[in-house]
Amino acid sequence: MKKTIIGLGAVLIGLIAIVLFRASTVFEDVQIPPAENLARVELDEERVVERMAGAIRFPTISHDDRSNFDADAFLALHDYLRESFPLVHERAELTLINDYSLLFHIAGSDSSLKPVMFMGHMDVVPVDDVTLAEWTHDPFAGVVAGGEIWGRGTIDNKLSVMSFLEATEALIRDGFEPERSLYLSFGHDEEVGGLDGAKAVAEHLAEQGIQFEFVVDEGGVILEGIIQSVDRPVAMIGVAEKGYLNLRLRVDAPGGHSSRPPPQSGLGILSRAIVKLEDNPFPSELTHIKKTFSAYAADAKFTDRLAMGNTWLLSPIIKAALLKDQAVAGAMRTTTAATMASGSSKSNILPTRAEAVVNFRILPGDTAELVRDRVVDIIDDERVEVIMETNINPSPVSPTDSWGYELLSRTIRGFDDDILVAPNLLIGGTDARYFHAVSPNVYRFIMVRANPDTLNIVHGIDERIAIEDYLTAIRFYYALIREATG
Ligand SMILES: [Zn+2]
Image 1 (spheres, rainbow, N blue to C red):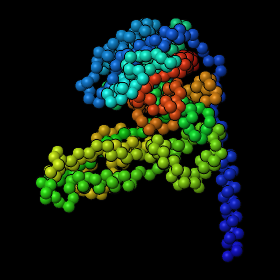
Image 2: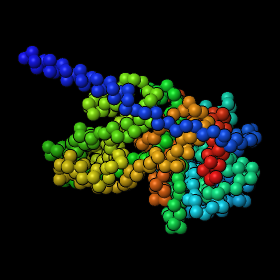
Image 3: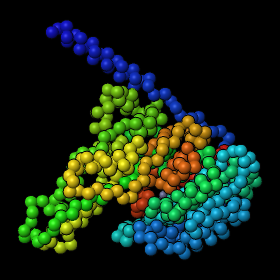
Image 4: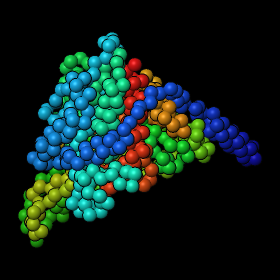
């Protein structure tokens, strides 16, 4: 007996030694050194800010109901861009895709170099009437106040449209002679799926056989005070995004009067199916979380390094802790969300058809078909029909050792070497998903800072950007485009 205890003690001490050793050695500093001597741009700050405010005044709203599409708002924005950026319009070849999306191309002198793509979108989400009164300034008035530019689209995503164009306009003014071709693409329907915009643009480019060295779209931002594990700001570069699947669950039943109900109504059968799905979530994994953590681990708290350096031993404990945060959980598993349901249209009539829609956000590695098959297995009830509707598979995962990723990293850090750069998995969707067809290196990042106070303004109330942040974005893209195009 005594021997066994000593044996267990030795094993335990051995384990603790391994755990501590790994916490201190497994993570190397992988941060790419900051770029030096980046090109600096001269800006007429007042005019730049006024031009951005002007762009906010066009209500280029994407509605779920496409019949509400306001073509005039988009055409007026096109005219505004033409007036605001005469040099870009004179120099670039401009292709209209499906009438409203814009594709600019400035040819480089060396056609053996693959071009680079900077993309964004001109459409914005609507402002909910109920929340309108809560806005400090009218969301479409383009107000500049308190050192900030206010309104819907200031970040998502007229920030990209305007800062790319400001940077390119200034580059041309300063004698831009790129070796590598530059493309700018601005979609008009990102907020409703990007089918007529970005998808068509990507197809147009693929038809011409164009492959890009890298593609930059919106997605990640610089997080400040949001990641608890590290005190420094972290620029998140989205290297992949989750897939999207709607499954319609349908139960057809005899119906009849509610005074003579069967033991299970169509709605009851449907509800059991939904409960089974919620009780059996998809398995979780730490792959993506760990990849993000590893990038800034050298600066992370010791206790977090201790945990993440020993997932071989502590994985169940770590998962249980992380899954409590819904945003983090989204990067760990395919998520299940029952969102819509219907039964009969009258309180005393049994439904002849009960239906629900369950929305899944699919982790890279899973596919829509795999999710559907698993759902059928879990429900395990032939009375419930499972119908596949909107179905977008997860994107491939872009590498972090490509020239494009490294260029982005060192340019970000060239602006502020306190910033750490990390790859992450986007739990939402972007237009970038269509561009994996034209480049293996697709990165989702906009040069803007988010803190706990501003994290929810995108798609929310009081969307706005600090003037200083907007000017930094233009300066950043000026330098980045210069570095990227040679
Ligand atoms: Zn967006």
